[in-house]
Image 1 (cartoon, rainbow, N blue to C red):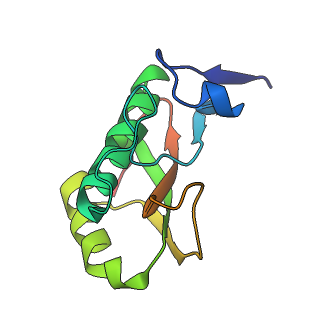
Image 2 (image 1 turned 30 degrees about the vertical axis):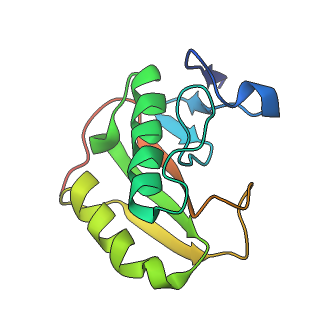
Length: 133
């Protein structure tokens, strides 16, 4: 089985030698997405909700480039720099996901790739088909 690289244009990950993700058979595995725009500029510095929504927009963009979408996500890992953002993460899940909600790992970390980043989200999704209840 081959792994097909997922690309977006422009690709804000290119300067960092990171792939957006890979499609392997019927699964899509994404790199962690953060609150940056298409050019790699920070969005929502100091604003958790703005960063979270931008990270999810980036997840959606990468999935769409692979022929999928957020409604096919089966697993997310959400990294935050402070568990005080827990209610914000619950609200984020409600804004972006519907039942059946994806499997989820929620982790607090000391830091992310840059000091201004408050959240990072990676995802695994179906390339084809539907997530059934």
